[in-house]
Length: 467
Image 1 (tube, rainbow, N blue to C red):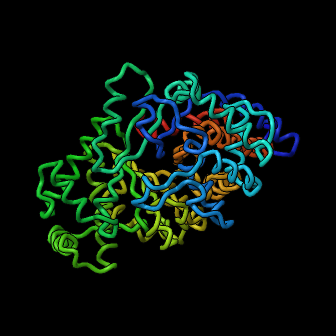
Image 2: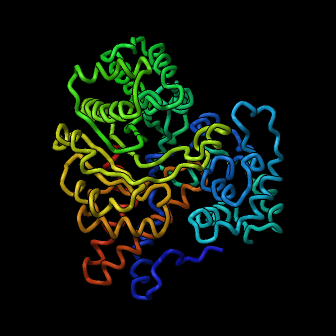
Image 3: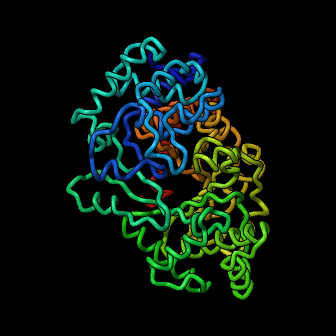
């Protein structure tokens, strides 16, 4: 099913160059510095449950497409909040629904990733469809019960050098403790995601502050001790391997309030007597405070703005967060980041990685910003744009201004563990095709392109995330 030249340029001259470049990078180790896989998989090292639980249930790319065609989340085995125990959906029936609608994914990166998984990992020779669904399910289910398909064994088979998960600041990181204390040599680290205690509009925010107080011994009704509590949790995450924090705020806005202004704003936030504008101002100030802490403790700061999260209100109220209803919105960076950059933009020891879901910002804002400020780097094409054309567009619109070395390579940002090799392979193929075009146009010689290809696949990410 998998053509050896997939995703490489169609022009014969450029394709030959791309083949040579790809041969140099295809077997490099995988570094996955940002994602959402479950650390319990690697702590417990137990067999994955079944094909549906592994490949469909955790992947919002899959169920958002099926939902768009009128298939309910209940049909896919995803229960409403609070009714998990009452919901019993036959996973094989869910798989049949998925297989019968696999044609919906034609032309999408999901099919490219899944075809790679089916062909390369499970060695299935036929295309998935309604007729082959049972054979697919039975073979995958049988293999998942074998030693070779345990999580740690797959981690090693995939040639993963490092994988980062993402946890709430309130997480006890018990699974990471198990991994650290085991004799397994695989490197799985955590990432500090403080949104639940930085965003006043995050559900359960006030209760989260109470939990933050109890686990740190700080009085989080006091702004100064609230900041101390955040610093304590950052240190806890660093002790468990974290090299980065991650911030998923609605905007990229930052602020630089005085201490008295920050304290007065926090009092309103703590009393739950704030407006939407004040909630946004608080988030902006906290991004700047997080930058200050990163300058002290060395955590790389990732900013992932521009998603209108849980846009489908009914779906959110019924099923909770992360059910495929997040939608990109226009995002501004130049004015938004200026307060933070005025304070920290020239610091040599601070690193901030910018992501966007707004492709109109690539050449107008992000590339010029990263091409100037020492603290800024550009993240790869993200989420809706983690696709062949999305990867090409970000290179085409940013490299001339920012250069390759103000970017951070690739990260897969996935919950779907088995898709990690497929996603990295896609990125490497697309980058080699882009570089081959520069060589074919005599804008770069092939040795330079080879060096850049290796950096994009491996070197830049290690440097950017202090690995």
